[in-house]
Structures are given as C-alpha cells and as structure tokens.
Figure (tube, rainbow, N blue to C red):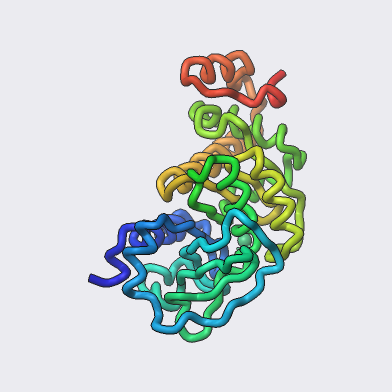
Length: 274
Ligand code: 2HA
Ligand code: ZN
C-alpha cells in the first residue's frame, strides 16, 4: 500500500491527467483542489510527513474551512507531470483553526507550494460548501480553449454566456440550470479575483474568467470534470456554428429550454429567459 492507492488520491491524479489530455493545461496552466472527507484523511494520514511544514498565511479567511485538509496541485507545476511525478506536483495541506493559513503535511516535495490560485480555490470552497450544505468538495480551474475564445466575442455578462451555452447543447440547461457566472479580466492569483469569483459561486456552479479560463465546482471528480467538459463542449459547438459564417436558422428556443427544465425536473434561472 502507498498513498497512491487511496481512492481520493487516485481520483485526483486521474482528473489531472484527464484535463491534460483535453488540452486545457498547457505548461503550468490550471489547478485542482479537493476538500478531503474524514475517511480520506484517515486513509492518507499514515503517509503524512513526520513533521508538517511551516504555517503560511493565505491573505483570505473562512471560518467554515478551519481544520480542513485539501489535496492541491502545486504552484508552477504541470498537469502533464502529475501522474508520472505526483510527489513533486501535488500535495496535501492542513488549514489552521483560524481558517487563514495552510501547512503542507504531504507531497509538494523539494520546496514546492500549493497552487498560486489557492486563495481563489479556498474562497470558492468556502462559498460552495455553504451553498451545498457541505456537499461540494472539488474546485477545478482549467484553460478551456473554446470558453476562453468566447470571452473575446460575447458580451461579458452571465446572461449572454448562459444563453449561448444553453442553446448550443441540449443537456446544458439540465447540467447547469442556474447558468454560469462571468468575471471580467483580472490579474490572476490574488485576493481580488478570489473575492470576485466567490461572489459568483454563491449563485453558480461554474464561473468564466475573461481571457483566462473556467472555474468549475462539484461534489466529486466525475461531476466537476463533467461540468467543465459540458461547458467547453458547448462553447466548441457555438464556435463551429459561428465559424461557418452562415446565418443561424434555428436554435433551442426559450420555450424549448423551459420544456427541457420541466421534463428533467430542474429549475432554470428565469432571469436569463425571454
Ligand atoms: O496555475 O492557471 O491561473 C496557473 C494558472 C493561474
Ligand atoms: Zn489559469
């Protein structure tokens, strides 16, 4: 047995590989964090370092994440290298009792640090944990190509993006009936983008960062990856349609969106319907 046999660690590594294979993680692009369950912590604890590393203040704080443990990708690390070299690419951090600092308890070997977007992930975990009664465990940031490209041509509003995505693939209104949030271009890695994104994530499971990428959340790796995949696929279809240069003769109408919502038992965000 090793820590790599523990289910949550296996699932984390698999999701990194899946994202890499999709082409969403050039160089050190993107990051992934998972809030561990009590049984995950128990299973991983035997492999933790004998001596945890120093506490590091995050510049953000959340009461509801005090004492939690997260698996995280490393700052400057490449998703491409997670599976062949996990010990240098990912790690486990513990959050202190004040909910404002982390310390590394496993991995991130040879001086590596948690992702530069850890403050954003942390604030989003806090908001999504509260919004889902503790169900949410995964926050995923990827450089989804077609989603990024759309932020150059669509107005940067939640409504415009939600409608374009809903209309471009029939399952979208079922997968994200509340729509998606859109964050204007901001400097990555800091507290400002963390706060702006977490405001959006009070309402949405996913947010788009203009000219940068996608933030997706969910209760497990499958649902979170599936959400990002669904959004990116829909953006790709929208692009293929636009790229023909032909006029759009038909799309999914608002009545059709309502019919989908009715039959699948989901509550569509009425603000985005005409
Ligand atoms: O980890 O994607 O947003 C590199 C990034 C920053
Ligand atoms: Zn990024």
